[in-house]
Image (tube, rainbow, N blue to C red):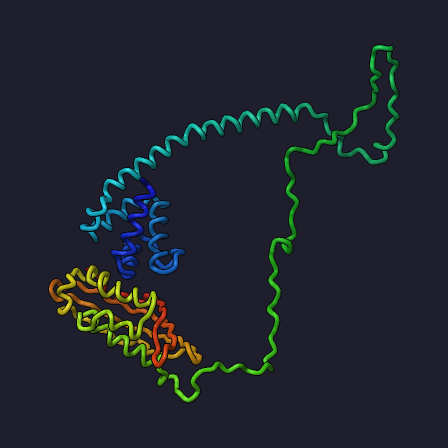
Length: 340
């Protein structure tokens, strides 16, 4: 049941929340979204639930999610799943106490037994006994033994060969505790430079991959407002990149601004470039384009807004006579307004 709750929470955070809303949710819980070890919204959602469970903040997370998505909360029956999870945690804590007591008693018994064993060892030789005096000890003299008696050799007590049970820490030289990284091997700068097979006759700002990025943003505005069908996006988008854009434009965006998709014609969409698209690298059949973009979405029916400033890195490939976005990465830099 506890796994079911954590799975439900991860699924809701991934499918019902935008990345901007996740950042705001983490801020409400005093959790640094960017320090979570996951990658992308899928990884961040998973790690947010895990951190909240480890810190005992799962009820606070659920409470905030209920405020933001009450309909999803009721549909997924999160309240009953949370109660079952907390009950399971309490029972797990009570069941672990007898085991802890048993381990404590066992350790105490071992300690007492160890003291008894140590007391049976002979006393250690005086520390001021010289090596020569140890070598000059008299030779043991056997005593007379009867026919039915095993002869017992009597000799002076010898120093105990059993080492002290108290470990003595031997200081380790600092040089051995530090892993010394070898200095990087210098690479000769006289090697012939390898020029990628880019299009040398096209300037960076005129590269067709940059023109594609400029065109897709104009197309997205029409798609978000219902003026461009999602099928036409395939001219510039492919694979997982196309699926991400369609999912945002048909699901996440309208949940964020509290709008029904049938009302999308009234949606207000605007964007501008903080840093215009520029070419990072290119070959004959592939290119990487970087841009900083500020997008704003507003529902005029209730004044709900969503806006952010992001860094986008587009990975494009050339298919036939056009450039297509196969993948892209985005990182939130600023949130001028949060969905409210």
